[in-house]
Picture 1 (tube, helix red, strand yellow):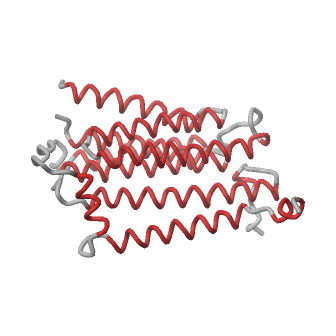
Picture 2 (picture 1 turned 90 degrees about the horizontal axis):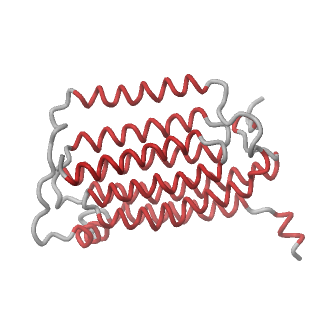
Picture 3 (picture 1 turned 30 degrees about the vertical axis):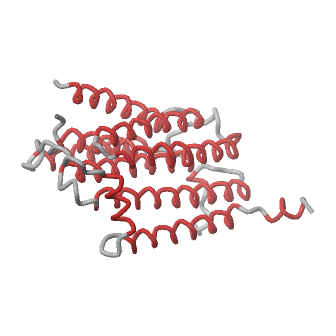
Length: 102
Length: 175
């Protein structure tokens, strides 16, 4: 049997890699890839706590499904923004998208 | 070492290596394909956790829809910075330090917790987690309201995405 800690440490590693991607990448699409990694790490934790807690209580899995829906919404809006900015500014580098700065 | 433990370690190693490639590889198409490998590893993790529905949804929604959407977005924007210029910003070492500190902090925080070595109880005989999940999602006593709110959120996000990405000029030229 697998102890709960293995899943939690695995998810912590995935989350940290995603955090690094979000903070260090210059390309806006790559930043969104990092966000996906972080959301997946959270979902692993939710599923693991569902399995290691009371299995008949479905809260953990329902929460994971809501996270799926929110992730899909986030990606759709995020990529639409990136494509829209690319069309008007011809760049996808996050540092160069500074229209709100003055 | 039981078989399940060996399978978990292999899956976790493959997933973490692919996640590392997602955040470091230069070519974004390759990053998106490594993301598919990562998501598949997470799907296998769900299967190991007996979360059957989540494993299937992970493959269908994440790999089938979200990863493909990423590949589309990369192809629509790629000529800008495919192979020239650094892919990481100048302060990447601070980000790496922060990520390592986050990992260390999380593991250190978990280290003192006494629930760490919990083993999963056996699945109850005759318990079907998929039908239990379906019941929970539509039962008024459980999660029907968050479920409906999530669907409204998804609809609003999709309408917003179409509106933001819509190009009026290309719409005119088609007439």
